[in-house]
Length: 228
Image (cartoon, rainbow, N blue to C red):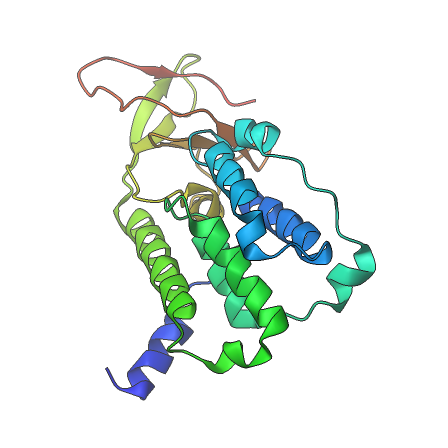
C-alpha cells in the first residue's frame, strides 16, 4: 500500500471516544509511571488489572480493578504524549488480549525514557500496538455496519423497544454506543452482547450500562419495559 493510501486510511479512521476502561488504565499507568515502577516490575499488577477488566461488565470491573494511588496532578499535566499513542491506547484497552495493558504501559514507559520511539514505526512494540488498535477499529466498524434492531412491543402499548444482538470480537460496545445514541436519538433501543449490554432512552437522553445478556430467542414473544 502506498504512503498516500495509508495516510488517507488514517484520515478516514473514526476516533474512539474515551471510555471508562481507558480512564482506569490512564489513572493506573500514570500512578505507576510517577512512582518510577518499571514495566517488568509492574507486570503482576497489570495481569491482575486485566483479569478484573476482562470478564465483567463495566460497573463490576470498576469495583474489582486493583486500586491505584493517583499520580500528582503536576506530573500528569507535565506528561506530553504523542497523539497517535493516545488514539491507539483508547482502542487497545478494548481488545481482548490479556497482555494489552502490559504492552500499553511498556510503550508508555519507553516513550518517556526513549523519546525517539515515537518515530520508530518498525519497533516490535509499536507494531504490535498498531495491530491491536487496528483489530479493535475493524470490530467497531463491523458493529456500526451490521447491528440490526428488531422492535419488541411495550407492556403499556406505547413505543416499542428496538433490540439488537451482536457478538463482537472485542469489547467495543462502550466506544460505539454513543454513535448509536446519535444515529438513533429518537428511538428506544438496546444492544445486547455476551459481555455487556447498553440501553438508550430518548426521554432522558441517557445511555445505561447493563450486565451481559443471552441471545434473544426469536420464537419467544417478548415485551419491552418502558424506559425510566
